[in-house]
Length: 134
Ligand code: THU
Image (cartoon, rainbow, N blue to C red; front, side, top):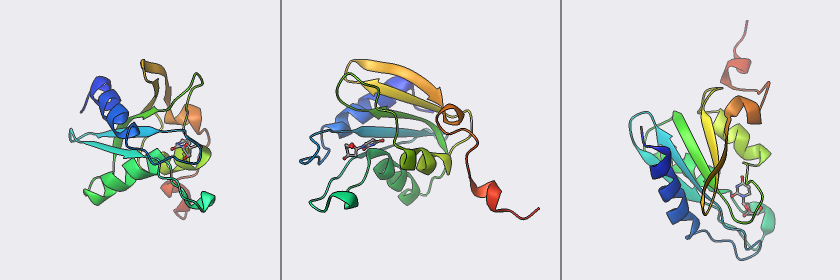
């Protein structure tokens, strides 16, 4: 599995490519899978504001397009002083492909600022198992 350092560098590199002319808030995300691969994404905004997509959504799309579906750990990197924790929708996107103890590392340009598990960010979550009949 890729190290947190490798994910940090991948998130930083793709953050620079973000298309965020409206918020001017660039975000990068990098997913490590258990197979040793790294998939990254950046936010892509749109003049029709609600149509914009988050960095995590891009990273998940890249992972799925490559035929992988398990997130081992993920780094999300934003700008500014505050922690750029994934938005609610992206917590759910990550949840679909991760375990309750999957690490989610929140970074700034200088390094990892704080790490959470998925369960800490999305407790009592709804997932594929909730759809199974008893
Ligand atoms: N953004 C992300 O890419 N990921 C998040 O989890 C939080 C927010 C983006 C969306 C928008 O382009 C910009 O950051 C400001 O909200």
